[in-house]
Amino acid sequence: MSFGRILEHIVDNTYGARGAVFLDKDGEVVQSYLAPKTKAELEIIGAYHGITLSSCRKFSEEAEMGSIEVLICKYKDAICVIKTLNEGYFVLLLLSPQGNLGQAMYVLKEAAAEINAEMGI
Image (tube, rainbow, N blue to C red; front, side, top):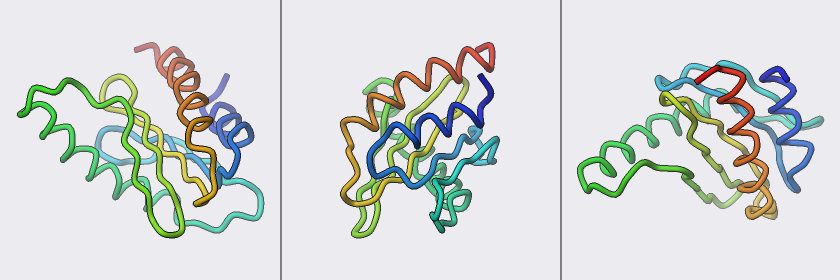
């Protein structure tokens, strides 16, 4: 399955999902998908959260806490769920404030395995 189809599956199968973006370790967009009627600067949101993820990764290494699996940022008007992948890649799922966070984490976990397999890493 292509990256675009995987992202579409994530959004279509998560209540309240607005879009998903797949990025490399430098915050460069590999692929993105927006739900119909969604207006968001998803690629910019993903890139800036990549900076946050990078800082959190450095902290977790210094504190010897292990690698980050999921990072959740809750805002007044949105929830960003970041699922880390192999080789520093990650997926950011943008949810409405009423989005189903548990469902998002489950769908992202399954999608992460598919994306890693598709990348061959």
